[in-house]
Length: 564
Image (cartoon, rainbow, N blue to C red; front, top):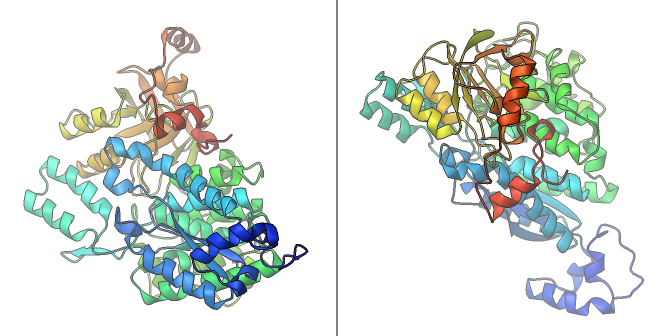
């Protein structure tokens, strides 16, 4: 070995493997399996999200092992390390849910720390539960080394009495049980059949929304975002993903080449077409911020107005993600958008080809014998389903998911709650009636802290038959499984003195989807007087991860990032 070694594929790792000064470094590497021949190979990190915490991540270990073997066969040196996950479905409705969005930043920080600390040349991230994906993409954007994401795959649907079930079925069953429409045995049957195996939540909820967005951005292989975890094609997809890193290394294709503004616009277009989660707004804004592209929450509204919603998927539709996969997956959706001029075809991807090149063999028309993907000329809605609302309640913006709802405007008395738990108790105990507008506040990024998802109260409303009859507004956020007349991500949040903190029980509030407005019917003078008397709540956590998050996190309107 000589000090003059010129790196090629090992552009980063040569600093720890080459030259006499690095003999101690090599000694450490020999202890984990390196030989003389390996020190000239690129070191490729495998961020492995395997965890027994949740079925979303329980099947990732085998995929990470497959990636490791594929990297070795391709001439690289894999180094596997673990990343965390917090299960939204399991923590939902509890204090633990405060750690969910926080985990996105922890995941991003951990991947970045390991890859930088170990001078890795490239990274492949294997993730499942929904914060795994934006967390990985944030790290990739920060580091700008050849990177590829492997989605662990969706769960297959459960079945009961001839109907498909998902975990959201179980949440909604709680509301049905409290309303008396099902008995305890039926509640138990739904619980036992909702999650039949490994994989992320099965509808177009946040995990599958983000996997679809990442494929649309070009950061994962075509078709990878809708595969089932338990199917053999997911193993093959993982092998191909690992192998794809080597041409990227040779050409030095990094996230800065792929994550362009056009790529993010493509992701937003796909999210609108498939009826994806409100969380996509938060995560796409967060990832894009590291590319300094000037993307804002208003861009979602601009794209929404030109992109139809034409995939009939849960939670508001009929089908689950494996059904979408069997009808052509995200490439089929993208091809239909591309043909209508609603997608940028010239964007680079991890295949080394453009979006248009990747899609050249995908048919322009979807098969007529399926109902999952509608003809783009006959969509579920001529515009996208994620509406950005502004007004005195949300001058920085808020997000409403309007797929499947009939009520487009509601005006009613505010029912004010300072936590999710207070609100859920009121719903379960029949204290919320048709026409009410529920406000759940102090659940924002700082106020929670952690910006919990309100799946439990929204599902309870649906279960009680109030999904289209009651409005719900929060500075928290929603599960991808949420549907109904709900508005989240209200900014500024209550903890920062936003108007949502000043609303009192009985105040009239208006949600107006058509005019994209969210207002409390208060005069400017009333707001001014109330603001003068308002004081924020003291921090709920004095030390630890939630305390640090509360101090650092930005507004939801720019992605709730922690290093603004």
